[in-house]
Length: 587
View 1: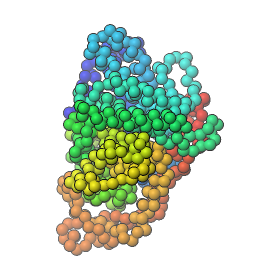
View 2 (view 1 turned 90 degrees about the horizontal axis):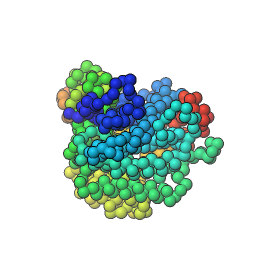
View 3 (view 1 turned 180 degrees about the vertical axis):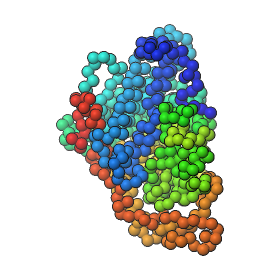
View 4 (view 1 turned 60 degrees about the vertical axis):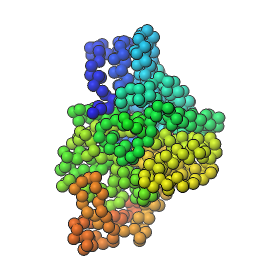
């Protein structure tokens, strides 16, 4: 078993006594530098990346919405685009990401000053360079998320010292993007390829390249901007067209490096469902490397520290009576009916991505009531090797997959060439052929638009089907300037389930003793199970029955274009730092 990034050797470090913990004496040995590097990774754990950023802050979108209607829950309000500057969840995200940046700054500053960095053995210098590369990458990723969520933000690249002026205003996101991309180009050469080191939840070369490509595409895309003073607010690109082109080139080159890597460190897992069985089984993907970077979430005691909620706050529900056998599964996120309907019936990803079922008190797989109450299906706690009966599951969260690399390559390469090249089409078809396993000839015969915008439309749909519910969709839609358009389309598709008389009201299903066995289903318009199915033991659940216009209206109901593409800066941050200006939409 792999204990995420916190491997056993973290407990064997030659660490000083508690009274000696300071920046000066924590950077003497390689083991100490390792401990501080793992401390930066710790920023990912607990709830901000397993319950808040990758769930509620990443919806509502055209794939998923938060559960329930409109509540006073801080997470629910964020998901429904009813943000407030005093939102506690937003404050927590802001504070923890900047804490992660500070930890990284200390490492970036101190590791190159270590005697061993210059005079150590080749093995010691190599290891220290890896730590430095990881610190650069982690700082870049935390700053990327801050920019993605808040736009122009304070940016600090040195470790804090007493007496320093901390009252700084926002810095242009374009400046931040340029700096973190430069840092990642350095980090790429400091970290090893996946196959050259033991499997851990740490950044390796392919993952750094993939994150570099993702960040470059965001830097090249749309974001909500305003002039000094808060006027002229709107969705715009970086005004430096040459820089935009450079970012697409970086995205294309970095993804192409991964695809053409002679060592084949990262390839597609031939089985889509196996990606998630391996992840939920608390094992690393050592065969294929499709999971390129995942947040390590583990605590052997089952407690919160270092752990996460994957499978419990986003996953398939399990009745509390049987969690000892199945794990404590659950979800605060719901998939949208229109998203489920958008899949081709032959696409194997649909029934992995969307769970129309749950585990009941008898341990049976049963169909869930109401189609708008279906859940993300990629995270299933009964697949876990070590099943948790608490909310903290010990299941990692994947932040980057090789399929995403293929689709990013297709996007960047086609942008640079004003339309899809054979290489871009091949990358797309690799992803689609796996999705249509057994029907690959259908994909081989597909043709696509010859212009970039037409091909981008294909990629927009494909990213939804391939990467759906993984917390990427909202941010992709923003960089394409399509969030408002897709939310409106999602509500319209949802409303069809209410108004279209051809959509059945009820589903009749046969409970299954194995969670791996699909429930046979028949649809109809009466709550009473038809006699032939009743004789076989079928049960009845609502499908579209009970759906109202009010329920439909909840999806992204607070969204305002040219405002909600970014969150407000938490009021506590402005109170602490009076030099910080607020998002003009929240003044």
